[in-house]
Length: 108
Image: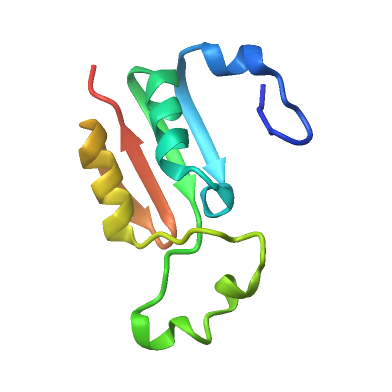
């Protein structure tokens, strides 16, 4: 099953609990990231995993020329530290197993 607000907008999926949720090249398009992360927290079952893949923001000196920010649909950017903050805010564990990927786990 998969949810997409444009191509597969099934609201019933948003009321369920999941052991795993993946957001691949999604979070940079969120106009209300705080609200979306609150929704994801409600949807994650205890012990569930949230996987986020997005191009982590470059350092400030390179931001002006960063290719990722030139996409007009990319409205918010995340550093590794930002996603670790989000995880901490919700009491989730967070690991970054490789470049541009964060895995967050809700406690049991």
